[in-house]
Image 1: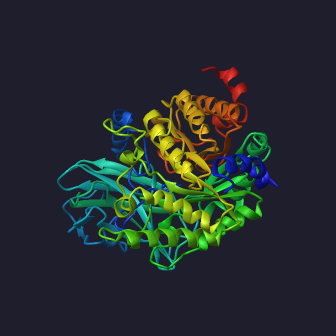
Image 2: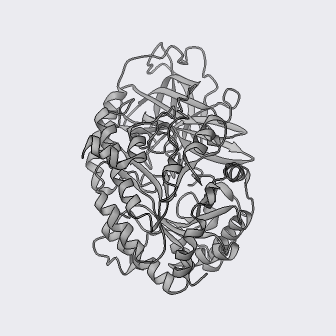
Length: 559
């Protein structure tokens, strides 16, 4: 059985260490597949570490310049005869206007916005199908200030709303007043009762009026080129560690599920087990999507990982609003965790219990070993104090004493953040808190130093509990703004994957699992930077060969 490969091997390590025992309704999260979710803001989804800000800005300028094209799609909806069912979103008011038009004489003018999410939306319930993939494009022109716009979607299922961003180099652009700027994005839809697509602004407080014109919304057919004759990755690593992927419900059917079963023996729910997905309102649990993922994972004889129980992002506001008493916050946290973990007891074998309790980097004036001073300011910390971490782990353990419980975080190749997390976990273990592993997320880029990653693996191994690489992807920043990955970036990415997997093999005695965060570039939460080993059609990139045979790949292609 695939899921049993590491169960027995892991338990001695865990028991020795423990004594036997990734939004508000007005802020659309980025898809996760995000984390992401997932689809959330850039810091919450850790787009890149702070030291790459300058590089990000220069690449955004390139994407912005690409957006200034003059081509008009033949399927575009113009507004010469009506508004095509567009309506205001929030306080946004929509009217046909002759003040500006990208083609013809009319556009739609959006006014009256009082928040960044206010604007204009198009209901697509009657023309879209659940789990299909769709393109949304339009031309936008702000009236006054330069503004950054984002294409997004809202899905409502059983009365519960979910927000996702479209992805692609033109799905978020900065438009200048007086100029028409092209936007275009792709998005795999979730299940829904009703759905709408819309345009919003990315900046808090950005409420400028704007025009849109020449809108396209259409289905995108994906013809998969999955090669079933490729060696199965999880079999290559059967003697090393579990090899996993992150999924959303649409992945658990058809050819995408066949692909998952071919290459992976572990599955993480990318978004559908996060607090806002499972309990959007007090006591109102929505299990359908998570149940589907768990059932298909177990049917495929794979190892199920739950993500995540306590996180500052993608948690509904009611759980810990400003002014909540400490007692009520603890009750909400414990109740949520107990209900979720109990439901999947014996099915979800690993839980990311607490996610991202520390900021991207530890401030210079903070000593990492004084870990409480380094914690990220969050509603859980404000309401409960640092004890929320211990409370979360004990609640999960009470609900399922056999589950493996992980602390999960990003940028753990950063030495100062690594030390803060190390000292936190060390102290909690000494106090008998049931922490069974450290999850290094692994959202890397082409500047990541593999030695830093190895140093962190070895440091966390000193705790006597396993390490997992929980959300691995590698962005190619130089390809931002391109429709396809640049050849030199694909090779550089593959070389880094090879070097990392060499390290993972060398330290497989302390590594329980390596999870690649998503199936393909197009549906990755970092899709604009081509982070995964597979293309949109599930065909293998160079990174696949690098993962399958790191030593051989490096011998052929060098450093």
